Image 1 (cartoon, rainbow, N blue to C red):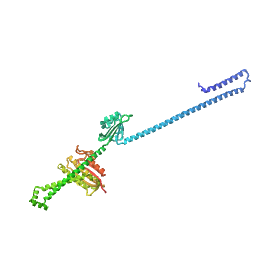
Image 2: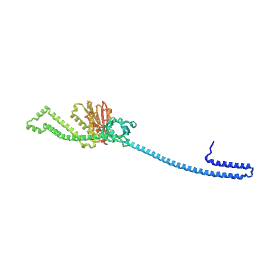
Image 3: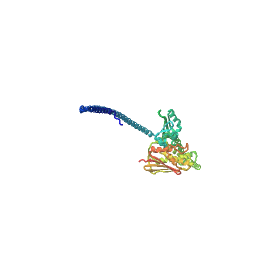
Image 4: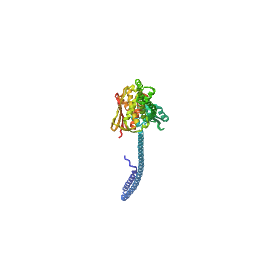
Length: 483
């Protein structure tokens, strides 16, 4: 059975009670036979009273409903306002969070870009020595991608760090940094010089950051500078010795010349002196011829002149005052170098062991370029001596071809040999400082690197090498011609 709502019970009872009373009254009048007493107006009035009461009650109920509706609307409005405010605050917080996330991502990318742009290797590790950071330089140097490096043992990726395991431990456990400069290091299976720094991370994190900066070029330049200072000192010393040697050599040459002149039949003074002393100059000349004394004089004079020529070449080659650049013909410089090397080999008696030959083919034109004569001579001399030494190391009688020619506005100096050649592996390293295939103590590995520096940096030229194993090697120097 359906139950009536609580608010409809009261009016229903009133209406029902009124109807019951009306019916009962009607029946009473009917049963008493006093029909005349029952009047319709009374019933109507009674009904009107009931209707008025119901109307008043309904009005009251309506006001209650309106009041409840208003309160409900106010409650809903308040809740909607609260919800809207909460939603607005949540939206603001979400927006702020998104802005913070974007700013954090931008900052992270900014610092990552800085780390990746640095030429030094930057490696972050945790307390287990596993890699947590691997910048672009580390990737480029080792050839190991960042994803492959992360969480790997740093000692596995860079075995050279095993020598500094204790320093890494001190940085992580005791927060003791380590800085080592220009140390020998094995990096990507290549020997090099590095600056190594190991720093602990802040207290909030456990681990360390390792910086490895390859400074091989800097070390090589420093060593080249030291070597250059030594060469300059040796050059000055050689120049001083040459001056000291030149004086007695001049005296020897003058005395030899005087000996020849004072035994000559052509000078009247000699005839007069011979008559006074009772010596027959003709017999003396016959004696000189029989005993080949004249040949001794000639040999001594040639040797002294050769020594004087060597000294003069050394002076021209080593004198610091000629380091300035200026317009110079190339061919005379080449001739002087070849003469100097020939005489140096003769003095060292290397010609007794090998039958070396040097062929010089110079351009007919008097090509002039702006250069420093001693530096160009140093380069050519280095190339000639490298060729000779390469042939001698292979027990080959060298045939050195030196020629000059023009090509595309440049004067070319080519020095080629018939030596053992250079392997393809070594060919890319021939101009590297301290690279040498000679035994320990037989070479510094600086000759070709210094030559490369002189030609490319000092003279704006080029130097190229072409070599075939078992056939020979050719170096070509190109210098811009003066217009």
